[in-house]
Image 1: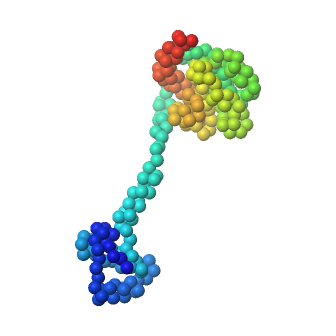
Image 2: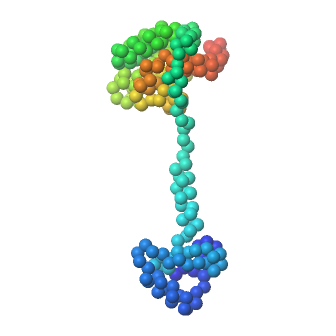
Image 3: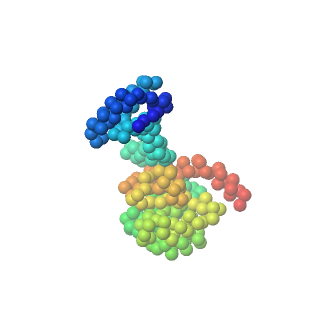
Length: 241
């Protein structure tokens, strides 16, 4: 039988008649029912189960808050708004104005049409674009030539991205070289221009397959932003060798 109020913790003292009455009421309870009582000290209600025990209302009230706190995990910022792509104008683009100092681009894509679209877009920006057909060839090119931009599609090699020979080569590349390469990842699971996703995959930019028709405008937005943010730093690092 309950001996203290679950709200104020005040001692509950029942006389013989009260105990008898409470006992009879508890026996008549149906499964799931509770017997309502009021604390003589704080006057707050108490609900007794068939054994005469009260639910700890303080804990009961705290339970939803605890559950809410448990689900209150750190959430990443939302992906960028791409509505501007719908209103893009060719007049808004100055072709080649952002790539004067980064002429070489390497394209790794298994689809001929997409590879042509990518290389055309890169060349329109002033890059000298080269495409390869295998990971071995890509590794040879990347180790022999200082490419300023590398574009890699997740289907270029069989299996998951984490198992990709070339992608892991890029991830393990010494930072003295890696910081000079603008690494673009493409695939169906990406959200275009989502910086958090790019960072999580050791890339500078991610582009979704569904946005490939807008690849050139995406580059026009992403590359100047990158140069504005990191250009001065890269120039200083270059000056020190």
